[in-house]
Image (cartoon, rainbow, N blue to C red; front, side, top):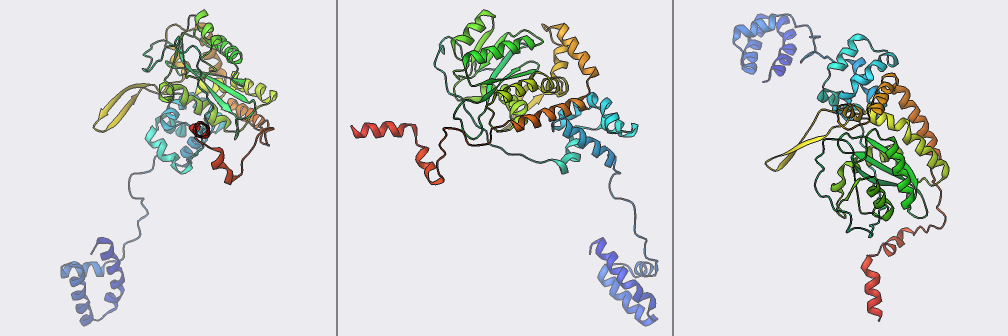
Length: 410
């Protein structure tokens, strides 16, 4: 019998034993010893003893992080945009001075939040975490111009100074790619993780170049290198001449190899797609609202208050590949310790972060996003033909099918 079963058996037998006669007690003792394996004297002491009072002490180690800590941690996690535990741990020193007033934190709760580790953050936030699965849409068509002039970069830029960046476009076409719609031009610096984004209409070469010039003026460091995919919006004479005129190293990734542009693909999700979703934006009002968001509040939130990690090395252990990352830091903190940056812009950004409440910044971003969501085009698109469900298989034909059919009819 287990200890729990033995205690339940003795609890049931004890009233009968204490109320029985001498002869019946002897029989009950024999039965108890045969059932529990107790010695006869041990059984007598157990049956004559008073029933133990139920224990009120909680088993296991005492709880350190109580409800106020979990509530404050959940509020910080939601306002900061649901970062993963290592990034949230690095964000706490920046956010706690403002959270002290916003959330009414006591000194004891603040000490707990400063001492908490990433694993404990994952455990405490597990009940409130949800998983969102959405479908990604790709709208890039390969460009054919100047490919022999722009070299392919298949390795990772091993740089120690900021200025070498990856660039890409994120389509806001909604369920249909027909007509002209807005695109988000995303640029991320490899060394610091600094991200700048601008909205453009369509994939016009001049529009992309104009947005890139605007981004260059806002960067707190000179642009030294640019790596893109093989889309015609980048592989063209306008951008090629622009890079040559500004002495920018221009490279491109391999076709159909998104891992060659892994940095920008990640930022396309965290800085654009997760913020705006998959709605269609095609109006002038939406273009103006998106650029207002990208140039001010979202730029400050992502670069001044959102830490990121940098891959240091990969170690293969058997069949597994383990990646080693450095400590999470914000892009601004990485800039302040990097050579070759614009010190005046960096100091101005550092002073602005010291006086800017991230909670107010998050509320301003939410207000702008609510306005932007109302500008989304959710109705039918003019000139768009939507096939019936039974016609989809006729529409989605293999590219070679039309060629083979024409050859067979000759």
